[in-house]
Length: 295
Image 1 (tube, one colour):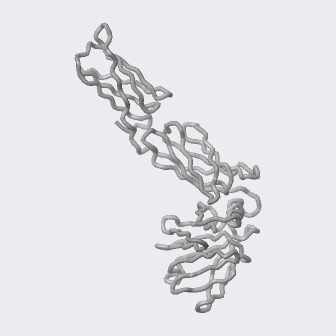
Image 2: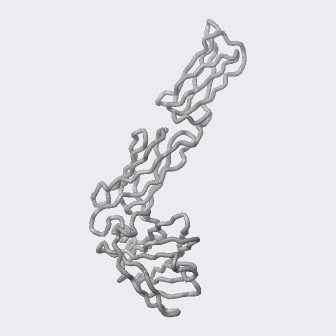
Image 3: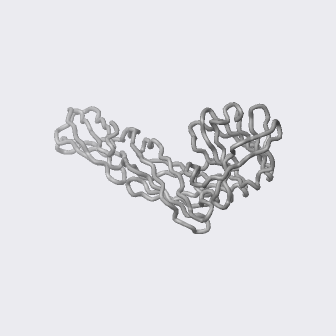
């Protein structure tokens, strides 16, 4: 069963066997990837709403009857029309009233899988295609950045689709959407501040889709660089080598207090030398990345 949520900050999901539990902690709405004809019956158990599907799956909306006016439930239909649950009558076995809405009225949030079989996968594809073949954009959410300057992202898309991600520095990475509609990817190079964009092509070759994007602001300071002092030069100066985050500026302090800065190259290496004679002692190194994070 696939559910689309418009308020991921206040909705949680649990999936056990054929039962999917939806828990609201505030106002919100969800879309269930099922047509009207897929619904077998609805019932009330305590304050919970149970929606039984003909394939044996069940969606349980916890505490629905506590504040039903705050909880909107939609169903997706294959003809690009949708249906909103607008009224329930009865006590235990309920009669459901569904009112038509356009799919555009509730689509657009990320798809969150809570257990997905083959039938669910096809429903997910139908939702992400907008019902009539227009492949929707995947979602993309950037992380906070890694200590080595690389950037991880997560998102959702059509199960089996290939998502193409373009990172702020132009690096392009592809990721396969799993059967639950999720993907995870990371850049292999440090990233400056900027947008990550994502498109998808489904397993039938349709696409690319429209573009999704999320903005990255680097808030993760870089790791300490490495530094290795040489044996000393004949004139008494001292050469050092080391590694750091590509594009970062390394600040070296030599034993006599001389300070030298050097840029880390694209391969993550640097080399520098003092310009004055050095006594015995330590060479220290710090770095500031290309986004100004650090030292």
